[in-house]
Image 1 (cartoon, rainbow, N blue to C red):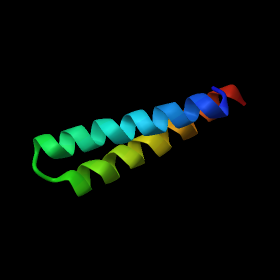
Image 2 (cartoon, rainbow, N blue to C red; image 1 turned 135 degrees about the vertical axis):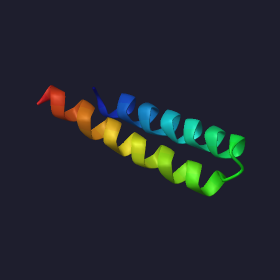
Image 3 (cartoon, rainbow, N blue to C red; image 1 turned 180 degrees about the horizontal axis):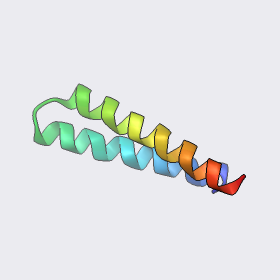
Length: 50
């Protein structure tokens, strides 16, 4: 995955976390969970390429 696509994965997971946070009335926690998932997805996707 190239660098631009990794950014899209990160931002997408962050917005998904924000949406889940809104659903469960805890936006801060949802944002942090989404960011963590985005960082992990970026790490695993760049690992497969190497």
